[in-house]
Image (tube, rainbow, N blue to C red):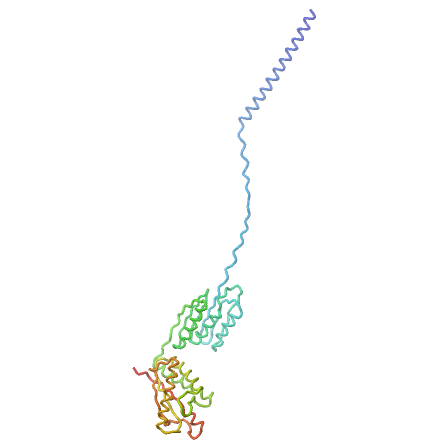
Length: 320
């Protein structure tokens, strides 16, 4: 009986052990189930923020545009004001010299700036000279390769000089805007002005050479002094294009009157031909011979005879 009781106790212990195992397994399964449920019912975590890469770009400023040569020139009476920017001292000197060479006062306001793009204001200086000679008041402006010229040419010769200078500037690559005009004087004013200028030319020749420009003794050929004087006369006649002129030939007293009359006419014609070669219209020139009849010096000396071998000019109204 005691053995049976022992066996029963052993069976009870075995059953109790199995039950404990079962309970433990059930608890473990319950924990697993709870863990699974909890895991499947949680919100998805927010995604991590995107990774950004910041690139810093350093932008170099563009190089500055070169300054353009810019020159402004204004004449007021005998004073010329020059302002603006040029690249070199030599360009500045060329502009200033163009003013002083014309006998005018200069108000120098030029700035020398190496950064200036060179449009060669020395070409402008070449244009400036004729402009200063040819206008009482005027202006010249250089801006980015374009030259604007304004003013009033005092006569056709000065207008020609300005035109020639403009052609030179254009050939050098500048663009020239020519706004100059030509002053036209009345015929009466031109007659008086031309006669005065011719008289001054001959007086100057007399002071330089000691006598009026003259001819050789018995031929109509012009002396070198006469040619130089007549070249100045030709410029004066083109400067005043409206009047005409009598060209009056004279001789000394040697030879016959008939021979001297013919020779005086030949001398006057030689002068007219020479002036025609200088661009003076032949229709403006009338040839007159006075022979030996109007001496201005003593024919008894060589010096006097040399002065008598001359040509005079009498400016007059041109015939229609």
